[in-house]
Image 1 (cartoon, helix red, strand yellow):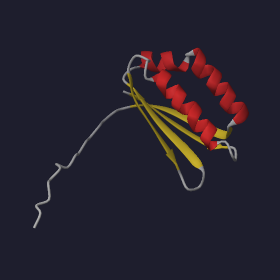
Image 2 (tube, helix red, strand yellow):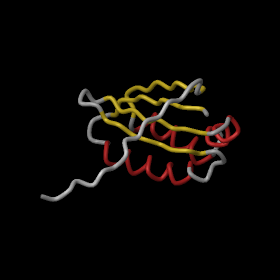
Image 3 (cartoon, rainbow, N blue to C red):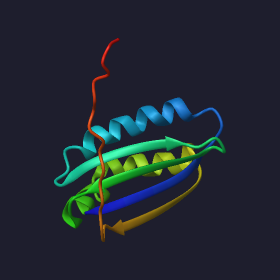
Length: 107
């Protein structure tokens, strides 16, 4: 499993337009082999973070070299970002917990 952590800051007034672009890019990313998920977060200080998971390097490479993705990256550098930082990590260990859902008894 490969995990990409993409942190960025956006120019003022472009958030809604940028989110629309990233939603379009996710539609394309979902068609890449090995795509698992994408989650976006906005912090109170203006930093934005996206976490993307791919099952294998081939899928991530297909996404990185997709012409529409490359064009969107160029547009984002010109129009949306003030800065960004990308980290690609390999999953070494994973642990999960999920509480069982319980139905509250009505009294």
